Length: 223
Image (cartoon, rainbow, N blue to C red):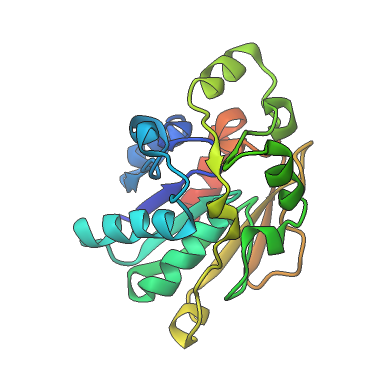
């Protein structure tokens, strides 16, 4: 039995994994899909002080509270920053990092460093709150999918894009990595050179919404 921790990307919540989680549990695995602070059931806790460090702390707290080890830690999109920071904090608990069409930072980088156009998004917002991309941009177009995902979206705090990730040290470098690149009509955020195996998935960016079965099949290869 493997243990998966699925971390949602910017603007979404843990609910976005609801079509994938049962496919992994049906195969006998343990799955956690938390909502980060300020998302889902805690959206009333979104403040200007919530940032990358907050989100990393959410995942580290979960791993420690549940005493999880050898975790397959999956981060979608922006959550590539989050899983990298979690690996930097508790590398001994991570069995594999999975970057799902995700940002892939190096130690000390911010999300703005990885994806410079985010700076323009922050400036355009005129606020500490950064609104989500249109769902069509994320590959979500079916009316029922648009209705479902729209209900879980929330703005992101600008701080989460400006705080640097901390992931230095040989223990972090030794954690195996798998990269899953969505090669449909999604926006490309991960095409800098990466370390580790690279798989492709014919899907838009929000692949857990549009092709949950195909995504689950790939994740099960790691279990």
